Image (cartoon, rainbow, N blue to C red; front, side, top):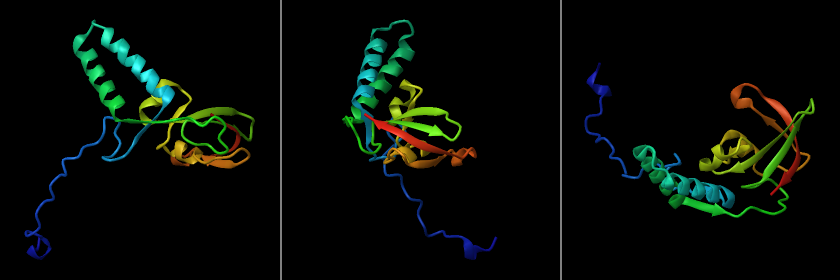
Length: 155
């Protein structure tokens, strides 16, 4: 290789020392969570603290839950949102009449309910701001794109 294409005078950039949050969000990003999700994680933390079976695994879970709960920003849910926002339940129907519901939540509360979808996921981002009657093309990122109609948006 020719020496003309080698940059020897450029120093390797140093890491800033900032690290991703326990939720996997980039440094400085808000870790949003619904009030209900935070409460459920607090309950789970209490359960883990009271368990003594596998002390090492339980201690790791307790530390992770404490770190997550310390990093969250609670977003109050809107009672009757006009458009889908954080914490809203969005009811969708496809052309064949199949109905599904999704609740837009924080990344750490997705696993708390099968209907939960993260606000940073492709589906969550598509649902944010949706209004009843709106048609959304969902599933393009997985190759299963289909049109869905927003039936209702609730708190």
